[in-house]
Image (cartoon, rainbow, N blue to C red; front, side):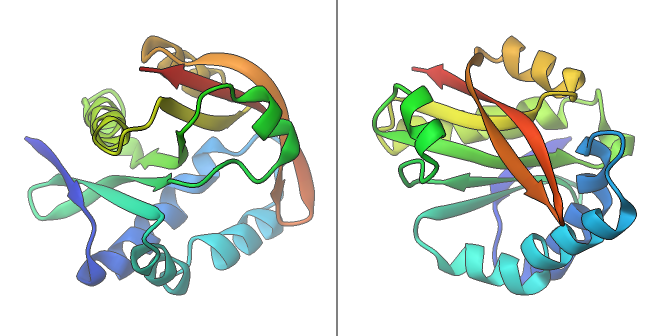
Length: 175
């Protein structure tokens, strides 16, 4: 039975470990190990999760299978900073689903659906008009998942992984 709850300080090390294990799975072919490692060190380190948990505009949700974290999502309750995203996303106020990853052994088990439901519930409870996210243009599996949850493509943006610039779709879901 998977449960989703807010992450707390004692979860930081495990969240970072799950993030390091899951992020490479969403990277497009051609992503170099060095670029992936640089992104993990810069964005998914224990220090960064400490910052996320301390920032009132960020929410980290953890999916638990027993006493083990098997997935997480990072929600950001600020307006899109990228001008291309700000122009494409028509919902205001809006919440960004910045990250949502599940360990490979949990794919197809309902963990992603539980994390998505919790993310959408968080946005609704916070009075948001909807949620937006970026997804790599080559990650068709994730695009299908988001589409099943009501997200549609509204634009494009770039995403830097290490030294490589990747192309993402911007998707949004209104309430």
